[in-house]
Length: 116
Figure 1 (tube, one colour):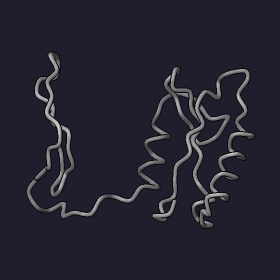
Figure 2 (tube, one colour):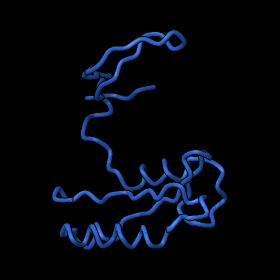
Figure 3 (cartoon, one colour):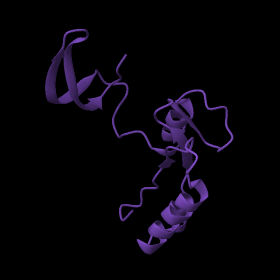
Figure 4 (tube, one colour):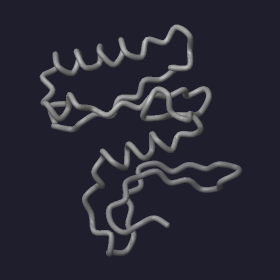
């Protein structure tokens, strides 16, 4: 919050009978206010989800079919990283791995260009 970033709040397990969606949202707001969040940060987006059932939505009564609303919220609220998309692809690899189904795996940060 001190960096001025607006968080995305995901309230999970709302499909349970004992879920306290409104209470949790209020507690998160109170926590952010206690941590001196600015007005923009206090107007945080909320995504309601059920990880076990594999769905997320931006409203409690949404269609509950997939995780696309969560990804759309991230794309809408998280700015793209700095970099030149027109330059050739380059990546700073921080971890190497291998999977018997996928083959060689690289984890890292894209510095320039685009992944296809």
